[in-house]
Amino acid sequence: SSSGPRSSSIGFAGPPEGVSQAPVKRRSAVYINVYDVHWAASPLNAFARDFGFGVFHVGLEVYGIEWSYYYQEVGRTGVLGNAPERHPFHRFRESVDLGDIVFSEDDVRAIVADLKMTWDGASYKLLSRNCISFCEDFAARLGIQRPLPAWITCLPNGFTGDGGKDPSAVED
Image (cartoon, rainbow, N blue to C red):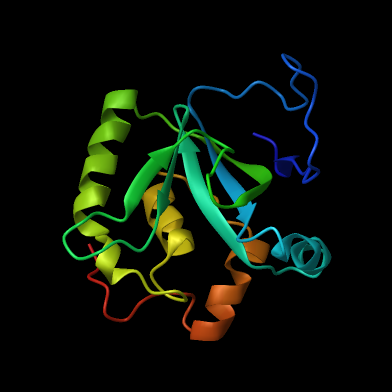
């Protein structure tokens, strides 16, 4: 596994059709895909990232599906999957390789099914139970030992003062 970002291009133009600038992803690899929460945040995040923070949305990619957590109305899961690096509302910034897993795709589907039950959308909290804390939980369940980079977790952790953990969340 590499220790740095897999890609960091935030420009509007991508590679020509059929040409990839990023290395081919390993099927058992896990990536944290990082997005600017809004196009207007891109310049701020480009600056802030160099100082170890920013305002980001993240999703955890495994077996070609990116899983994220969002606010939803009562009774609906907040866990949603989409195509990697193609979030419909946020601007893709970069991917970070978190390492490989030994779980099969069926094992991962079972973990996601459990996450869908425990991460209901109505329990979303901007600074403590959010896409970042979801990805930390998902990565831990996958056996990923590497923590999410501090520049991703810095902002919510700094505001909550407790590592971003929701004191009302049920611990497994």
